[in-house]
Length: 607
Image (cartoon, rainbow, N blue to C red; front, top):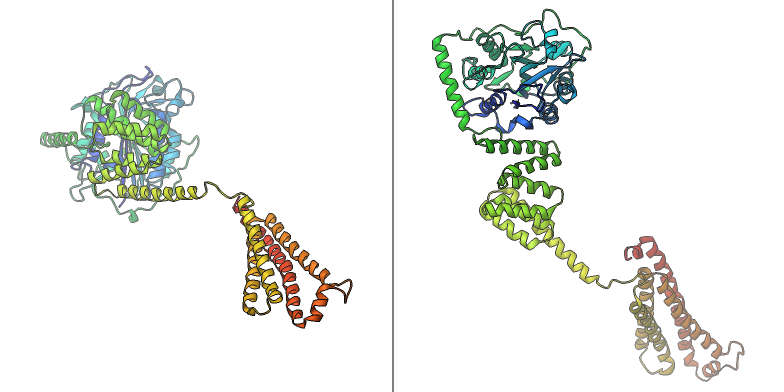
């Protein structure tokens, strides 16, 4: 099923005195919006209907909302309905039509909404199945009289460009009604403008098909044409491929072929002579006006209006006082700015509400959310605290407080606030999500805090002086253990050989392990330590060779000892071999570890 998406605009007063004040435009817009969302009326989804009226209906906002609704929100199968009540005028230089908003200047047409551009940007680009613009406008300016063919002709407003394009595109429709002009004043009926009153009246039954329970644009147009005088009689432009159902069950989305999104323009094209408003005659079920029928319709209308006044408006509020209604309208504008991703305008609008009603809880909550979104957490907390002073049982405010506290690393207080929110509203899944987020942040923060404690005195690039000397001491210890291990068989031949082997192996292992670890983790400085220990081993080995009498074979002391005791030959050879290994193997391992450390970037990570 498609959706019905509505934007209802009404403007009574204008900044430019060229636009005379209107009496019914805003009342008409409000009544239509209320009837559309009334469950006993149009039964449109309240979230899909927007009401913009008064000074807040600026050209910038309204133009943006129309384009956003048609292009970004509407999808295949949807119906877009835009109702405008206010002034319209023609550019005296080019003769093109404009809608006048609250801040429009007659002498500066670009401050109004240029209809050809709007039609191209919204109707032409929309994926909606149907797009309906309804203009209930007052013809402003003497320039109208030069272009219209009858006292209330609407075609000059649309111009040849739009009229030709509407003839070439299906399901893009514009319905116009003349609210008044320089020869006919605005007139009302039952506190509403005549056109709006009769439109709601038609919705209440006379324009409804008894069989399908649907009110289509064509049936509404037929009813209005038969019940309104020449001035307000609607003029419908465009052609339908499928019925435009305004009230009643929507056709299935699959049954509606999507638009191509092209809205052809024919610059300078002329509207066909045969093209005229009211594209189809009244349907056979349109009721004939009688006194009895008028009475029934009036009763239905009064009942509908009474129900609408007690039902939610498009902003979800009841009919309120003038000040409350003004605040409600401003808050709705702020939400629209948020949807359009313009937080600055949204914030300014909320500030206007708080200037009118400083204790408006809804405005305060929205202000806190906007401040939190841009990272002004402390200011947002102050606003939330102000809300909680007014309403301590506001679960949303407690959730906001929790989120803001967690953003300022006050996790314990945040956890207390979110627990309080859950006590007030235990069924809100978003509150549980906030709680899980806070607990996760607490765990991460605690883990980060422990890591910082471990790194209060982080090692320097080379591991620190203490580490350097410990490494030097361990390698020297390894060298000494190995020397003792290989020296015991010479000095104490009676000791078990296993003791010597254990000491030799332990010493060589200490040398190799420290050489590998030091160079891999700490780099060249530890490689130098290994070279130093290796140099000591080489020096001892050289001393042994000298004592053995290499230069004077037969006269060296060690040689004499071996001659006198042949059992010393093997231990002495093993002593020399171990020293050679202790000098060469650790250096080789240290060099390889140094290279590996550079390849894997270990020391770069430790910086």
